[in-house]
Image (cartoon, rainbow, N blue to C red; front, side):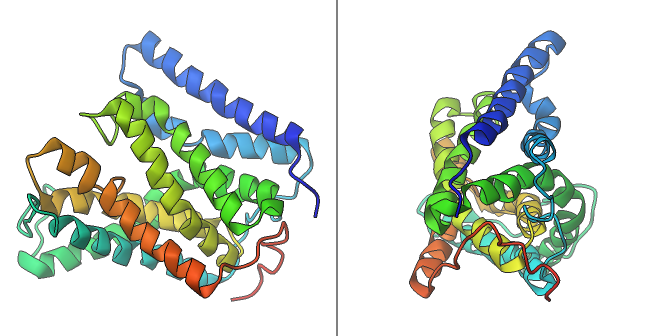
Length: 284
């Protein structure tokens, strides 16, 4: 198998850097917080990946832009919900963190109270996460688990997962420093986000390989983003450390939940990863 092409990687990373610098410049000129521009920034990995693929004549289907195996796409979408449920469980067992099932997580929408309301809320975020949120998530995932997964495939499952996870985490730095996810700890937040992305990445890689499609990563990412806020909503604490670094989908609760799944992948055997991971995308 051919080693990763350094020139292609240089183009990809350079475009990401240009967008990160551009985010800072535009936010300063417009006098807005970079977080306001985050929805547009999310598409920078996709743009970087497309530029490399189109300039170097890499077929988009080769990097996973295809339907792939439908049942694994379903697993990717639905699988985010038990992960978020596990995060919530891990959060509320920590001393100082409570559970409030009566919280109004979707203002303006009347839902049943108690556990039934929690279930109804999870169902709603599944629908939104697999549609609207997944479109924005695809803006990231085509770059990370599409082009970059294909490019780094010669390194094997684990090394690729952690390499992508590290870059994914650092890429968030401009918005993290601006107060995203960890408003009380912006600098520590960059390290915390990188650790979170490192723990998430093997699960994303696993599902893309099984689905033979980058769409699997977009679905997992979209539903996770849509439902992860429930952890923060239902896990109640007034302590900033517990709230942002522990009872958070990108805090200790998220790291442990995804980490447990990654351990399961390790124990059962990670799937082989080659640049042909999307070659059999017509199977179900």
